[in-house]
Amino acid sequence: MPETFLPESYLPVLIFLIIASGFAIGTLVAGWLIRPSRPYAKKLSPYESGNPPFSDARQPFPIRYYIIAMLFVIFDIEAIFLYPWAVAYNKIGLYALIEMILFIIILFVGYIYALGKGALDWES
Amino acid sequence: MILNLLFFYFAAVIVISALFVIIKRNAFHSAVALLVTLIHIAGIFILLNSEFLAAVQILVYAGAILVMIIFVLMFLNVTQRYRMFNRQKFIAFLMGIILVGEVLYVISVSAIKGPKGDFSIAKIMSEGNTQAIGRILYTDYLFPFEVASIILLVAMIGAIVLAKKEPQ
Amino acid sequence: MIPLHYYLILAAILFIIGMIGVLVRRNFLTVLMSIELMLNAVNINFVAFAHYMDSMTGRIFVFFIMTVAAAEAAIGLAILISAYRNTGTTFVDEISSMKG
Image 1: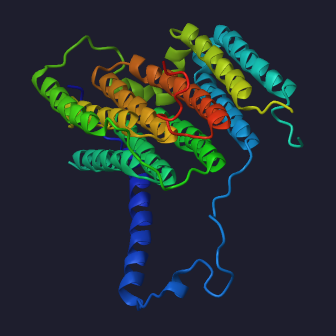
Image 2 (image 1 turned 90 degrees about the vertical axis):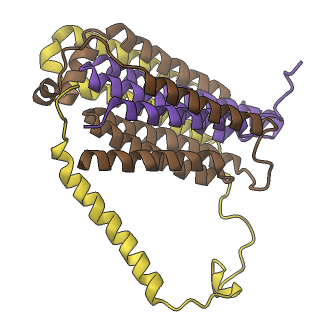
Image 3 (image 1 turned 180 degrees about the vertical axis):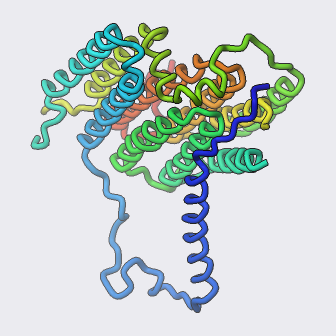
């Protein structure tokens, strides 16, 4: 059994979360208690005095957004690998620098490929 | 005391929202339930003295992978009227319940012991979580690190090849 | 002090929920989300053992698992898009043209 671990530096985060969620829940419950509730079909429609909705609000959108999101995920992970490297840089030195340059070059090959295939072209 | 309370809160929300992921008909609701699960798993990581992993969990899972899944949901625009479950659902649920029982039994009767490492809580706290991870990752685990870059490269090229529409 | 067993039980339950999701759901996207649940259960186990065994290896392994999970999600969603283009469905039991 290790000694007891208490992440006390996260106590402000906890208090903040409790206050934030308590405020949200409190206002919703207060509104639900106070307001009169007399719903009918017209009032519950999305635009009360506008056009009736004619299709689902979720329109399908083109696939190039997916490729952008995928590239974002990959380079997001590359950036996250940079964080512990940068923080520990004084302890690990030159060898890790060379390894990190190699890492970035390997992912840069992927970036060149995406550019060459036209995955980042907006007009098509 | 407060740690136990926090653990049970996180555990309860994780299990309930994970159940919502697999029983919600609308895939958007599943995605939102998955988001709640992932954020509470980050809370579990903070309880386990791994704050850097908690940050990575929120950045990578909740911030990136889930966005990608929701983009594909928007692209596919799945209808809501369909048969939800496969034909093998009853046997799958039965197997799941049996497996829960078995695993709980094995965990409750087994004594867990093993060699201790040299990263005690006080050492990690004094060195700093991120620096400890960086120091070990870039000295002992250099080769897996380079393999990870190859995996990312293959994923990037593969996803572009599969998802990009050929010009007509 | 929370015993290690509590974390193991939580991870086991989460893993089995994910496994049931993979087995029973027809929608490919929900199957992918269930796979993410299973990977997260494994992550909880790794970090819990690393914390109670005073080790760093489990935490670094979780880092690699997250990398592989991102790669897996990217490839899986690309396969889904490709299959949807060719067959017009996202249900795993209707994509069966390779079935013998």
